Each structure stands twice: as structure tokens, then as C-alpha cells.
Image (cartoon, rainbow, N blue to C red; front, side, top):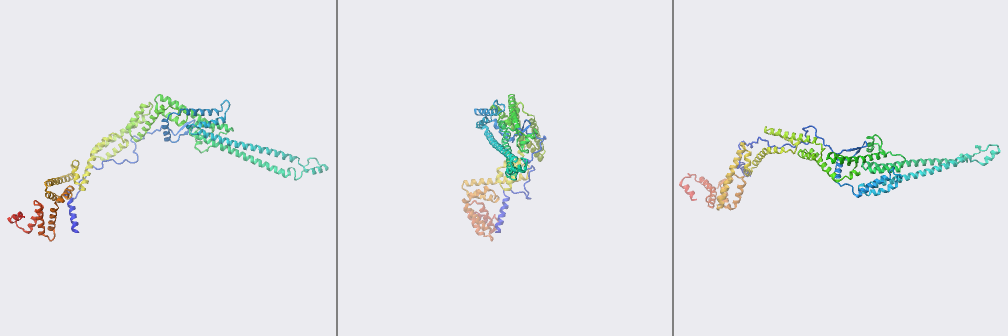
Length: 637
């Protein structure tokens, strides 16, 4: 077991020093003075401070609120509004027959319920027109919702009228009971007492004629007073119920009005307001909303008053007028190629009254011009945020040609400032590289990349560092292959490795030793191949076997020997037997000598067999090798 272990260690020692033997001292190949890490560090998550100070503001073409008559109406999520606006710009105008008929129905309803109608407002006729208007898809069935609100209000009003009639009937009953009770209290007397008083000379009408069971002292009179109190209580209960029912119905109706106003359905607000004035004619038009609600704050914080039905009506009319004015301004600016301002006016018109006729019937050709401009504008903002100033410059030039009023000063200044800062950082990085200040160069190139990631000059800088980084990679590969003992791969890549290690004495010595030994191995393989071609397999094997002892780790040499092994098995077996007998303790010289002779009989030109034979003869006959006897014996054998 110990012999096997020692043999294995010996083989490992030979393997470490065959094709390449490290220099004495056990030192590894000297590392290159050029750092292996030529890549820049990963940019930090925190954005670097702008070299020009504050970043340019990313102006949004829409606003969060729009003010009408001093009231700021919320527009909701800007991103959602922008998406809806772009969808609107891609849609055909709502000018077909159904849309025209729908708008005519809305106008007819408003005219029928208008207080300026010659015959006066007609609530029921206008109410009958609502279901027909709700059939149009663009109405979103809001006219039917308005009709349901009116119907519920009328039912509630009928209930209130019934309670009022009930109170009137109870009042009549109360008055009748009071009249009867008053008459009885004044005139009801006991006849026997009246006759007795007359006999005694008492005056007629003397209260002493009343008995405890008649007049105001009767149980009937007491019951009359109780009934009067009950009637008063029922009346007050019905009045309170009437007021609560009215307030509740008004509040429910007003909720729909406020909702439609916030949704910018101003025509429905106008219809609801006019129906409201015809349903309730008590003059109470105050909106029943929570004082802390957003709707109440829209009015209280803007105009400082509580909202009313009349204020909703007025603001809706004002919004309709403003939307029309926005469209007029849009048309004028579009004819002058002022696309930037025109797109803003159309955005404001859409945000204020997307369901109104001037906005909904705008021709598609006009909207498409705005759509192309808005898309390029949004892409411009995106390229600025992404710091792609090459694309930003292209878009800015395109927008300048499309819109005479495009505000390009901020964009141009940003492009000029950031591109200059990035170029200067690259030039500083080049200077640091020439001064072999690699860390400073990496910092500058990192700054240039953060300022302008798509800077074309970065490609030129990358080419400059590509050569240096390539040499470092090749050197690292050479050291790795050397440590792995993969000398064949080193020979395969000799033409790229040789320039990379030039000037490094340790690596050059290792490379020369490896290449010299591999040339020797290849020459032996070529010679063995020639022997095999002429049928001299024993000579071919012996040629490689001697080299195998010197280079046991070469895979190509081992593979060739494995291919020849079956063809020379008898010869190798004789040599192995001879060596085993020779190396035994005690040595069996005779047996070893006979096997060497047998190997010579198989391959007479065998140098290995001849050397073994001579070695054993020297031990048996330690005479002068030049004696005739020895030479004769050798020749004879």
C-alpha cells in the first residue's frame, strides 16, 4: 500500500514538471502591472447630481384642475386623462344621424322645460322625451337616470301632498270638535236645577245651574280636549314627516346633479336644474351636501358661498360657453400652424367638456394633426428623462418644423449643456488613461455615461480600452491554462498569447519551455506515424514509450499509445515481465534476462530490450564491455 502511494506521488511529481517545469522557488508567474479590472463600476442606484444644477422641469400638457367661474373642477388622474385624450384624438367625430338626433332631443327637452317658453314650462311633456334621448349610446343612459330621479321625486311629492290633505282633514275635525265643545260649555245645563233657580228667583244662566256631569265638568268635554291634543300631535308628526321626506328627496335628487356636474355632463345638469324648479316651487334650492365634502369645498374655497341648484346651473352654462371658446381658439391657432398652443387649447376643451357638441364633432383631420404632435411631444419628454439627447435633438427639430410656437429654448439648452458635460468627462477620462490613472479614468467615464448614456464618443473610448482589456484577458487565460496543465490549449492559442505576455520574463520562459517540449512531442508523433505506415508498430510504440516517460501528462501522446497497445501487446507484455523481475527484491536476474531476450526476438531493433539486456549482462559479467567475449555474446544474442 505504501509503495502504491509513493508511486502515485512520484507520478504526480513528474506530471507537474514535464511539458512545463515551474522555476525554482515555487513562485507563480508574475502578475501583469496592468490591472485586470478594466470595466467601470456598476452605477449607483442614487442618481448623480446634475453637472448643470437643477434638472429641467418636465412640463405636463394637462393640469389637475380646470377653473370655471372661479370654481376649480378636478379632472382626476392626469395619466388617465392623457390616455383618454389620445383615444379621443383617434376617434371619428360624433356627427352621424343618431348623434344629431340626440342633441336635438336634448335641446328640445331644455326648451320644453325652460321658463321662457311661450306656453310656460311643461314638466310632463319634457319628462316623456327623456327615454328617447337615453337610447343614444353616448348618453350613457343618464337621461333615464334623470327620469327615474324625477319619477321618485314626484312619488315623494304625492306622498307629501297626501300628508298635507290628511292634516287638513284633521284640522277640520279639530275645529268641529272645538265648536261643539265651546257651545256645550256655554249652554249645557241641568233642567231641574234651572226650574228650581227660577222658583227661587235666580237669574237665568246662573253657573250654579250646572252640575258636575254637564258642561265643562262633563266627561265628554274632557274627552274633547284630549282629542284636540291628539290631533295637534298627529299634525306636527305629519308636518315633520313631510319636511323630512322633502329634504330626503331633494338630497337624493341633488346627489345626481352634483355627480353629473363633476362628470362634466353639463347638459344633464341644466335639465335636472330646470326639472328641479318645476317639481319643488318652494324656493329652497340649497344643495344638501356635507360641509366637509370635496363638493362643498369646491364652492366654499373657490367663491366662498354654499352651492345651490342655481349655481350649478350657472356654472354649467359657463362651462359650455368656455368649451366653445376653447374650440374657436383651437381652430384659429391651427390655421396659423401654432400646434403647441392649439394642442393645449384642445386639451383644455376636452378636459372641460368632452361630451359637448363643439368637442365631440371636431373633424378627425384636425385631431390627427394634434395627435401626431402630442405623441412626439410626449416622446420628447421621455427621451429627456432617459437622457437620450441624440433622439431628443431629432424630435426637437421635427417639432420645430411642425409647430411655429414650439417652446424649444429649455430643450435646446438641456441638449447643449448635457452633451458638452458628457464630452468633457470623456476627454478627461482619456487624459487619465494616458497618465495611467485608471481609477480616475473610470470615475470620469462613469460620470459621462450617467450624463449621456448614448453618447457616440463612448464608442470611441470603448475601442481605446478594448485593446488593454483584451491583453489582460489573454494573460489571465494563460495563467489559468498553465495552472490547469492544459498545455495543448496554450499551443493552440500561441499566436495571441505570445504578444500578450511579451515583456514578462517569467511568462515568456514558461511559454518557450511549453512550446519547445510540444514541438519535441509532435516530432516523435510524426516519426511514430511513419513507422506505423510501413508496418513497424513495435518501433512506433517504442518511439512514443520513451517520450511517455518524460511527458506522462500529454493527452495526445497517451491517446496514440492507447491506439498502438493492442497491436504490440506481446512485446509490451515481455518488457513488463522483464522489468518486474528486474525490480523485484531479491532481483531475479535470470528470469528478467530471458524476458528481455524474448522482447528482442519479437522486435530485434528494440532499444528498450537491448538496454535491459546490457544492463543485466553488466551485473552478471562485470568485465570490460569492449572485450571480444562480451561483444560476441551480445552479437550472438
